Length: 585
Image (cartoon, rainbow, N blue to C red):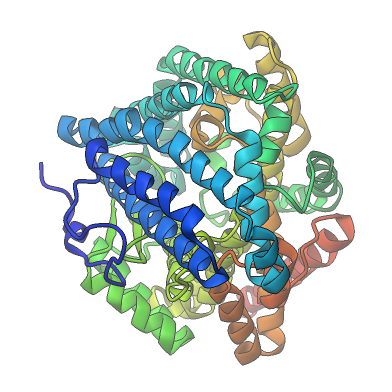
């Protein structure tokens, strides 16, 4: 098969170290470049020479990272294409295991270089973040973990393949599970129940496979942590994810803050929904439908309409962002429509050598698609904001701040939803989004607390794991009647891909949502300044610690109850204003 058109994109800058023509899927061609770097380092007799060596090493990393990203993107776009799967797995199995020890050696060489202390003394602000990350890399690397990490990647790919393959036959038509989401918004309650139940049963049919896949992943992760000298994967993961600025205990306190500050608001919204729907109890299929039983919002018919209307949003929000989205369209850096054989979910992946973003999603014509589009575009704008940074290590920020970029864009872009809707429907969509923020905090706490439990209880049984999940559902899901669907509730975590393929990558969404709400609050006071601060923060890439990135964007890096409380109050106030406009209309 041929890869996607972005494979013709040129490098952002001409290569000076990596050959212009090289097969980056052939280790025999890659290995000599590492040899050259290893041999060149001792010859760096000046700070300038050492910095050039770092740029050469970064150029090689960027080229290899882009090769990996291209293969991953192609595989997720076509999970049913054997050639795409083979190409991706070849890189995972034959290139990545070779890369890891060589990259570790380069990290060691830098840390042991005699000029490193001088570099840090003379240019501390420039290199301190890179230096601490390099130290962490060397601290955690274990040769024996390389094959285990390869197996982890392969098992993760199998989860994506299974999840992306699931379809149901609904009223004589084959539908992907993503496509079935449309029916959860239908006013006909019986139809919603039918659709929801069909999807739930289809997932349950694969529950044994999901459980076995996860148990395989969990076993690998526990072995990786043990090899690195950690008592469990929880403590290892917090180090491996580079969480220099917060701890596991901070996350537990965040869960408590969500329980105290957000759950009362969630229950209020659920009670209001139940009253508006005129039902005795809320059921799982009552959570996405409009509570006044209006037809589902239809922001677009075809995906091209979504792209055009999104362009209008960004043109109105900020001329620079509008131009950047136009560039992505022209370069065909978007794969947005849902189809059979496409991996679930949505993501933005940066092509590190081209320094361009690629957006992947599964749009089917729902308001959720608009939110996803704005979200992933925020990530794309982040990649483009840091595009001029030549130091590869700094073109990517910590996830906690990357998600500020995306979640703030949802809130900022929502101001112009009239590109998709009438004024009344735009308000309705904004309400849906704000209510979604209230809903997502408890779900984030559930997913993160579940992973805390899993990886601090090595050797637990499947029944114990299910019990832990159900306890968290009791704590954070509010007032929903699951009677008759207890098995679906107990296995609900199977749909959360982060638990399977990105362990402990989820609390970042909650931390970032607080940052995004602060950016939005700033915008309400001074739009121009808030946008300037937002873009200034993005342009820093990963060159500064998290608290400084947040500060540059005009917000604080805190996620305790005093921080959560006023932001939830702001959301409540905005929802009340919308209620007033609806009543007046």
